[in-house]
Amino acid sequence: MLIKKDALQEDYPVLIELWQRSVAATHDFISREVLAEIRLELPRYFLQVDLQMWYDREELIGFSGTLDDRLEMLFLDPTVRNRGLGSQIISRLKDKAGIQQVSVNEANRQALHFYEKNGFIVTGRSEEDEQGRPYPVLHLSLKMGDEK
Image 1 (cartoon, rainbow, N blue to C red):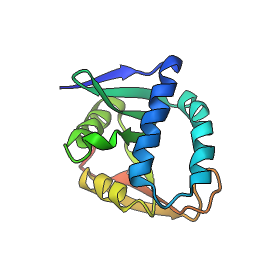
Image 2 (spheres, rainbow, N blue to C red):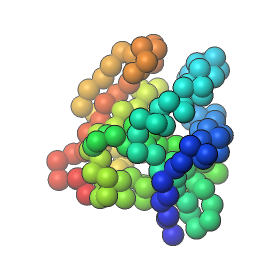
Image 3 (spheres, rainbow, N blue to C red):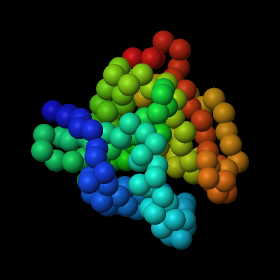
């Protein structure tokens, strides 16, 4: 049973550790130095979004951050990948938070496939990420008729 809980500032250390495990499993295209920079920026990013912690029963499995109709972040513990939990989170976020858009690093093919499987299509591309780093980003939106 998937349970959602609002994240508080005291949860940030646990979320940062979960983020570290998640990106270690999925973001081999980003240098260690850049990942270390991003890690330091995470608390500031967390403050800018509606940050939710996701549990499978008692186990913290991931977290998401939304802003308006955008999914700004979704990170899962690598031990729970490929169990359908990410798709369940996306479904809940579509229904309850009204997400319509997400961006993903172009080199993260696993994430792109995941979002496409969950009803998103590529609608644009940027040469750099939001911080101006040289990591191309794909912008995705829900397909018409796939809002829920």
